[in-house]
Image 1 (tube, rainbow, N blue to C red):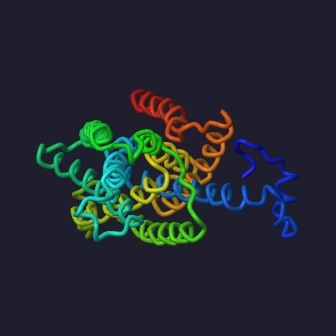
Image 2: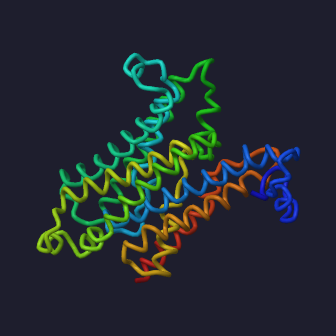
Length: 315
């Protein structure tokens, strides 16, 4: 909360947090803008961190990331449609407030399921092939989203507004909306934690998992469904933010080990802290301008991705 175009020192922040500071000029800045945004960044980062841990378990590949395998681009495509064509007759029965998360979820789940189905049709057995299919899907969906932005943007919907959202940036909700977001995120994380044992078993291989009583195909669909919901909610309030789901599970796995029980919850916690810090930097590095959050995560995540590739090649 100290970071932003106007920096607040620790002493000044503590003064503002006192009940007697309610009439301070910066009180509105802190409680109506910065605090909701910091909490939203924490929630979005937690969702992406947990989703990354789940996808790495599904694909059995530590390089799997919601951004790289097409899930986040799929959610972004759905959200772009919601932003650019809110008046379509097909959507008139749906509240505009619900349209964005619904289409984000449909795009995220559809993209991930398409990758898994295409890999099955092509008889891709190795996880590296699955990951390459996801990268190809992400590129295709990104190109399709760019075309829609150029074709559908008009004078009522600024292309720059949609573009800035797709580059990643935390939206600041009202307190009531933040309560809904937090409640939905908590419920999703509770269900995500219940996937832990199945993901541990799945990591032993399909045949071993079946022998241990895990319905592999159904479990993968359910896990994909839940992880897609996590990504969709994150994209709705944070835009397209890459590499958080890649970096965070690795950091946690190096510390706590590979078991998905602690991994999923700790990834949510670390992801939330990381994104809240990066969002503060995005708001304060070039005031009064704001750096797109997706650019900051890419600057950190791309070298991290190359480091993982180098480690794997040496092994």
